[in-house]
Length: 151
Image (cartoon, rainbow, N blue to C red; front, side, top):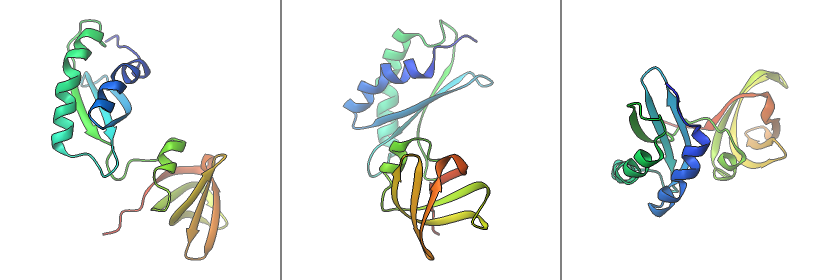
């Protein structure tokens, strides 16, 4: 199935998301299921009511954009989820002061896992306040960074 690039779709739909108080963070195609998922976020989280309203708001404009060049597809709208990996500088900046977990490809100072309060993200370096003090970790050495979910 031929589809339009996700960057084009996000740019087209971003103003609609903003009208609904949401940030359209990313779009993703699943070619196996012929579905497009739009991932949205907002401060305080996204509830089902907001997702449903956003879905209804983008349905018509997406038909006009025709992201599949006439082929049928399924549209999904989703929150990012609590355990979504951090991918961009913006992901880090919106979580300053919160506890995160950092997984590494290879040990750094004897460990492949760190957790602590996110103090800063500058020039591709994560600065954490851990139980043992401050730690700087280059983002390029991480396999996954996400919020620490304490149960």
